Image 1: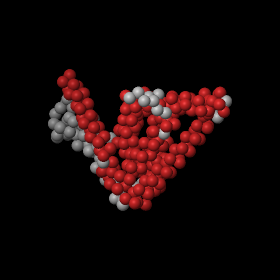
Image 2: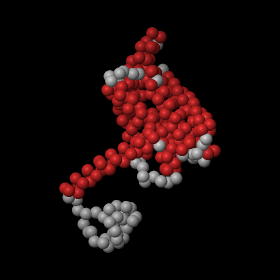
Image 3: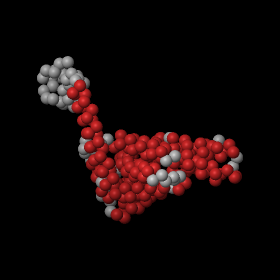
Image 4: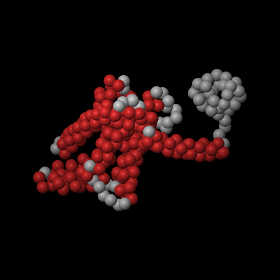
Amino acid sequence: MSTSASAPCLNCGQPELTGNYCPACGQKRPHRLSVRHVLHEIVHSFTHADSTIGRYIMQVLLQPGQVVADYLAGRRKRYFNPFQFLLLVVGFAAAAAALLHYYDLTGNEMQQRYASHMAALHVARVGEYFRYVGKYYNIWWLLLLLPIYSLFTWLIYRPRGLNYAESFFVHVVIGSAFHLYLLALWLGLWALQIKVQAVNNIGNSLQVLIILLYLVLVSRQALGLRWVGAIWRATLVVVLSIMASVGLNYVAFHLYVFR
């Protein structure tokens, strides 16, 4: 492997590198792999990721408006990838709910409620429905609810200059905060051996509270809205989002159970 000063970048072909990093793609000048190099990269990847993720967690929880403001202004390098982080934390929250058998217990409870006035086949499907919701929670939230929340935010905040993609990013940050709190809640309940069900509305209540609070904070910190404007806009987004979420769940439940 050539390491001369005039050698082109082996990653992108940029000619005649003069420093330790390629000015086109940013790759460090490579050298032949050694055990020492591999060990260094492994240690560095873990310590660097831990540090970056830990800092980003605190930023999302305590300064969501600053994260949004910086990202929309193009100051992005300082942050851990928000989209990657959301995927990670949604996955962890879904796994924690599975630890609690959250949706299985909910399905059992709902089956007991419907057993006296519903056909046995439909009662069985009730349990199946909630098991599927738990199994595919991350897909349900990421592919259905997140775009819907973003749509309502865009409709309400469009006069303030937000486009749909920026509204989507707002909910990437808020959704990350919500799932961090949800993960902490699930792990706490699991550690205390407390059994809960979706019919208790703990998760839904937490989501409404976090979206409302954090959307107000983002409105204030990133968009410069006054308290009154921030509160009524956030409240309207939450109300519309609840209506859409409940409606989707109602339709999906009836289509599955009574198909």
